[in-house]
Image (cartoon, rainbow over the protein chains, first blue to last red):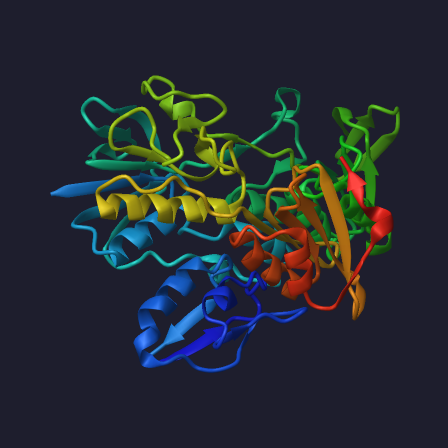
Length: 62
Length: 402
């Protein structure tokens, strides 16, 4: 399981960091960074976070 | 078997459909959409698709497995008594119905049918506009709101001259506080956009392949192409005889339910009447998606949910700046703060008489927007919020009392 952020779509809204700050980090300027990969048991929360991204910039690879 | 029918396949409709199928809805989910194209992300039309930086495929939204998507099919009547939507493709029955037909770009009556005038709402609109644009084109954009300014930002890269005519004193006046509107107005010229505020367009005449715009101050502007970006009107035409209450949109309660059983309304089409800050009609993409997800969750739960109360969030990229607007800005006091590390990055906080922050508009400063979002969710006071922000400077001189 790997989380990626499409830098061309990300708007830095920060919904993802608000829900999972150990994985996502909003930058002052530019796309949000993935600072660590989530644990396997967080899949359900990640799906919600992906659904909450206003720019649909987050993807989950198997 | 249950049948959830969704009319309209944009942000609200597709989000509802995806939430229903991933949530294990026990029945069929059908989306019917008048647009002949695949479902796509409208926010990219005025930006990446218009400049050509993005391909149409980049904007296409996935149709989730288990969702039947009927494109190019127009709904023309709703029979709430028999729970049927009449469409070009025949009658579609439903057990639950989500109305998400959105809005139609507003074009004043007098300007309809005149050559060289465009609106931007659909992929078809963008394709038609792009066909007329060249590097030597001059473009006049009527309306300096979010859409008009996004289009202007995109077209300065492509065209020879870009004029924006805004009737209000400042651009983005519906979403931005005065302080930031002034900043953008002053930035327009250096970005290559000729922004004229405080005047309206009296008339548009097409003379010898050129549009002549006469402004209320007597000024004349000529342009090869005119883009009208004066907001949208809810697409309620097909619902006139449905028995639903129509009032600048389909009227619904705080749970987005209409007056007909089993019928919800989402996105630009919804005129929400509730006591919450989510009351009224929104024309924003994030709000539409949130409406769709909220209704889907209510359908999945099969019972009444707490009223829709998501914090309003709008973002846009205008004149080279990322703008983020959170919550509500209509308070008695505004406080302006700047990033200590970069004075170009700033935020205006809306503060109530009780010293609670209800919303903010942020220019370029994404980390501040994130902190503010978190604090807003907790109903923070100004002092608590300021203490949580990255190193900043409070601009006392700009404290305004509206």
